[in-house]
Length: 403
Ligand SMILES: Cc1cc2nc3c(=O)[nH]c(=O)nc-3n(C[C@H](O)[C@H](O)[C@H](O)COP(=O)(O)OP(=O)(O)OC[C@H]3O[C@@H](n4cnc5c(N)ncnc54)[C@H](O)[C@@H]3O)c2cc1C
Image: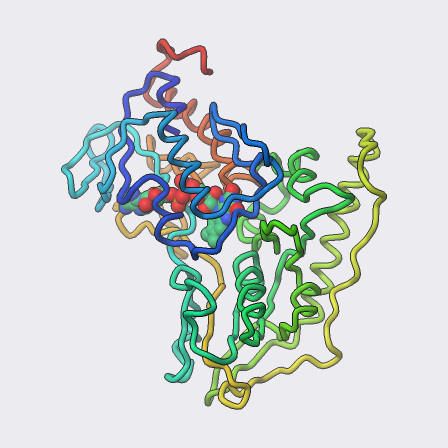
């Protein structure tokens, strides 16, 4: 956003509570690698120039990449400057921080869509002897209690952690609800290559049939490992991970699972096949000649009668990892624009109820790719245009060549 505001000669400041790349430094587990290939983290004015476009960045590489970008953009940045409140003022907004108060005509909330790891209410019924942690608290398998681990949630985070923990020798049980199956490669090309080339990642928020649903879908079961292995349920089952249904309750030291495991797996298979059909059709229409032949993955293997209950003690479960999703934190936002679930009401990032207020970096904000590093540039361009119109700043400055 700072790049686009500078391009439009809009005076601004970037306030960051930590350092550049704070989220990656402080809130992600150390072995995390990006699930998006190197070529796919395109930021305004900054593409990939290394010799491994199809590789996946490690956490330190991701931090270094964002530091390099900050060096290039050189934004008017205040680090260690936590925003403690944003409220309406006569001519815009008043932003309070530990380093003083700013008065401004517009505010862009770019504080991230994944600040808090969610822990469902039923976690309160977990017996006291069992350790519980979220992906933000998770470090590595060695830091877990010896014994079995229940991972709850099978989106990208849950599937990645189940893979890592099971490989470490601790037996994993994975509670699976609705999920989005994906394979790392299809017809010899990376899934993200297809998502990009077909335009699916660019699909706009005002074009999808059911936006509320699109915004609440779990992430692809994908990981960015050097061996490009899959982490879908079949891959995890082959490793020895035990699949159970969605965690529905906890009572008297026992977990209760939904009986829907087979159904959610069939649905995920169906949707993956639909996606592959769409890709094949696009490839045929666009004369993609260098891809392998089309094929379909083996259906998800589910045992005939998956268990509906689990006695934590008898099963040797010592740890529960809640991989049940993330949500943004707006505890400091004193402008009444949140819905009853705590989500900000916005139209493609424009907070219409509060002129001059914008939000960036949320799932399917303006495009399917909005919550990826790769998606923020286009969203920021669009929102900076709206913001400029709001300010009446039509004059383009000396950096107009960037637009
Ligand atoms: C587990 C996980 C894995 C992911 N993997 C990928 C991936 O492989 N590829 C990909 O493209 N995307 C991935 N994402 C999504 C990725 O997080 C976003 O693409 C990216 O971080 C969005 O950047 P952002 O600047 O919007 O948010 P963030 O990176 O979260 O940055 C928000 C910044 O705001 C600061 N902040 C928050 N509150 C305040 C405040 N009150 N005052 C001042 N500063 C504040 C934070 O310190 C932080 O630096 C992943 C997300 C998660 C949760």
